[in-house]
Amino acid sequence: MIWEQELAALKENGLYRQLQSVETLNGNGQALVNGQKMLMFASNNYLGLAQDQRVIEASIQATERFGTGSTGSQLTTGHSIIHEKLETKLAQFKQTEAAILLNTGYMANMAALTTIVGKGDLILSDEGNHASIIDGCRLSRAETVIYSHADLDDLEMKLQSNRGFKRTLIVTDGVFSMDGDIAPLPGIVDLAERYGALIMVDDAHATGVLGKDGRGTSEHFGLKGKVDIEMGTLSKAIGAEGGFLAGSRSLIDFILNKARPFIFSTALSPGIVAGALAAVEIIMTEPERREHLQCMSRRLYEELISLGYTVTGGETPILGIICGKPEQATLLSKDLHKYGIYAPAIRPPTVPIGTSRIRLTLMAQHQEPHIDHVICAFKAIISNDRDNREMTVPIG
Ligand SMILES: *Cc1c(COP(=O)(O)O)cnc(C)c1O
Picture 1: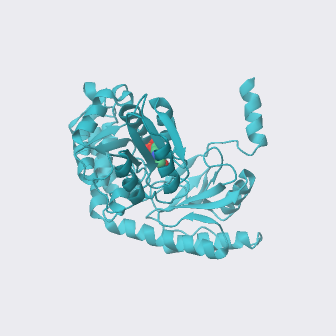
Picture 2: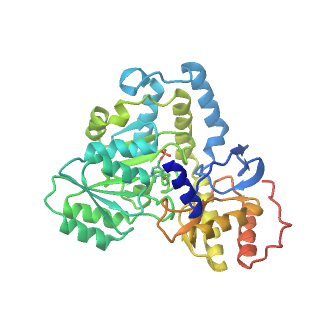
């Protein structure tokens, strides 16, 4: 069978993927991975809200009141008062006129890109953008031109040499999911103004994390109101599941009327929506989670650099430890595993060829001893000290 040959080729090239069974433990930064207790450094639950008791309570209460399923798409029977409350809250959080819920961040990107642009339009997309943006661009039927990662000169050159389209949209991740770096939004805003382009920012990793109040990339740069469409997910710092788009009232209304991922899919379940609502309220009132996260991530970044690792990020809870070949990344991941640290290898096509890596993500539950432990492990590994096995996972 053709797929069996392809699977064999994936194994041959170190690109075969397998599921791990993961069970989160009490929100203390640890998890059971295939039954083994490990320190979790691979979760997008940045603020720890997926295990926050207030979020869990809100979710249980809504499930008891409304049931497990939403029973229909938002335009038929799926839009309850808590869906409406969450949309209003998200608009308030993002400081936009309106917001709309989609079932995943993936679908939110699909919904935006297939609605705002189409045949005869131009999309300029950063080469480091998330797969859901890439797929959204393809499905939109707009002409898509990729510019070099975070490269404003290349973006300008491509704006200059691609004129005559009806509409132009620049789309970028706010925080890049694999490198953990931040998009050069001030320069993008400037170029968009000069060339009459719209801007869309995917804030999947920035929502709840960047900016004084966690509102995302535009708040981080003091550019609130300059981004036409802000996308976010409920599945990362918000600790639930689902996605959303925030922007002007008319744009959100247009998406409601046109976007197929919105129209033709059952709305999020009430329990999830209520959990997300409670989480957004916490994000808006508890900045200390963000500050703690930033301190730890800064420290880990600096220590790994000084140990001689090539590390990307540093300003966000995502750190990329670049290894090169897929096998090297897999080996480092296995070594970390021996020290009780769960941080999987990220390989092509998720990242460009030659940049296979370990992606470490921090969470607000991590404490200094956890970071100490990670630094010790990387130190031992780089000095090839493979006999140093006495380290155990500290109980947080
Ligand atoms: C995770 C992610 C998404 C998809 O969000 P889901 O809610 O998981 O579907 C979109 N964009 C980026 C940059 C992401 O990291």
